[in-house]
Image (cartoon, rainbow, N blue to C red; front, side, top):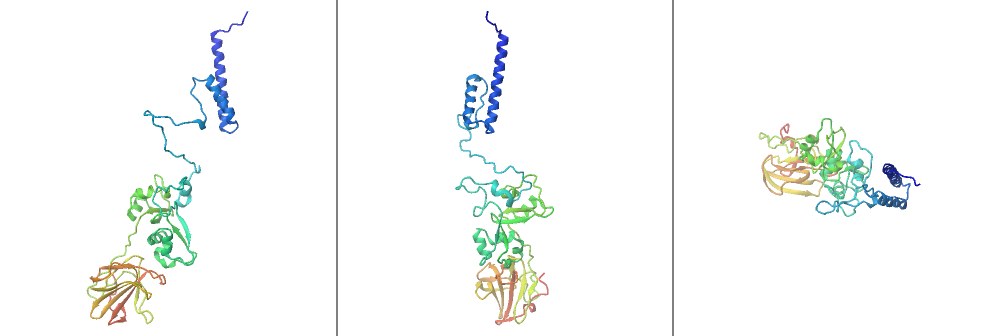
Length: 361
C-alpha cells in the first residue's frame, strides 16, 4: 500500500522547496557580487531560477542589465555616459584649488570643460616667476589679462613692479578676480562689488559653493569676469591756480636737481587728468625711459608732461582742464605706480608745485 500525501502536505513541501531555492539564489548572488562565486556558477543559479521560479520577478546579473523602453518604444539613456565616482570623501567648504580637478575629471580627451576657462584649466594654480618673466609675458602664457593677475595677487595690485624671480603668483582658470573673503561678506555683496550676477559666482564649479553659501573669512572665491572700479576721486579743477593736479595722491618723489619733476603715487590703472586747457602734441610710448607719455601745450611757452602711464585715451586734439587723458602705469623700473609730472616753461623744466594748489582736493 503506497503512502498517500495529501494536497496540504504537497503544497507545504513546494513552499519549503521554493524557499530553499530562493535562499540559494540570493546567497549565490551575494557571493558572486562579493567575488566569492565564479560567473559560471552564477549562470547556473540563473538557470535554476528560470526553470523552477519562472513566476518570480527575475533577479539578474548587473552585467546583463539592459535599458528598458519607454511608452513610445525609445530606449532610456541611449546617449548617457557612465558616471564615475571619483571620491567618496566628504568635503566641507571645498575650495577650487583643493578638489575641482578630480571632481570634474574629463574622461574624453577631445571634450572641453563645460564652463568658462582659460587654457583648459579647472582650478586655481600657483606659478613661480622665472628669469626673464614679465607681468605681460606671464599673462600671455596663461591666456589671462594683466588686470586678472593684479586682482588675484594683492601685492601686484599695489605695485606691479614687485614681480621678481621666485615670486609665487595665483593663476586663475578664468579672467576675473580672486576675492579673499572678509568677515561679513556675502555672495550678493561680492557680486555687486565686482559687477556680476550672484549665479556667476555660485554656479561656477571651481568655487565649490553650495547653499546656504556660508563663507568663511580668508576663503578664496573666483569672480569670473569680475572687474574692479578704482575709487580714486578726481582732483579739484582749482581755477584760481595756473594748473590743477593731474591725480589725487601722495608725492612719492619731489623736485630736485636729479629729478626735475614730481612723482604722484596712485593705484595702477587710476585715471589721470589734464592739468589745464591745451593741445595734445604727443601721446605715445617714449623710448627714453618715460614709458607712455602725453605732452599738452598750454600756450605762452608752457607744457605739461605726464609719463609712466599705463596707456593713453587720446592721440591728439584739444583737451580741457580736468579731462581724462590716461591711466596710472609703471615702467617696471620705478618705485611703484605713479605719474611722472613735469612742467616746462620755454622748454626748461621747472618745479610743478609752484603752479599747483596746495592740495589736489
